[in-house]
Length: 110
Image (tube, rainbow, N blue to C red; front, side, top):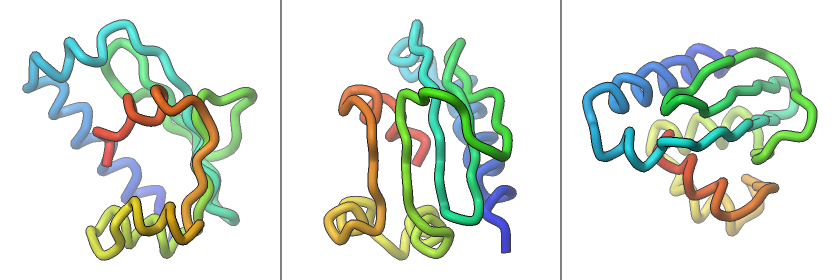
């Protein structure tokens, strides 16, 4: 099962939340970050710019600001709330590469 539809749904919810939440829009103002999500057999890229997540595509990008490495089952578990993100990180089921401030600015996606 591909996680692509789940990621697209997260992006749609995030962008809808941004449309409704002026405070969140203000927090995101001026941010331009690229993200590479490496789930082994599935890889996706996206960018945060103009207070929205855009450019969601399958495949890698050059020099992302943040790289998240995991596996599809762990990713699904985190999104569904069955696995706590910090526990997955502590157990090394999720690895994050990038500046901590970049990671924190993207945490609202999940």
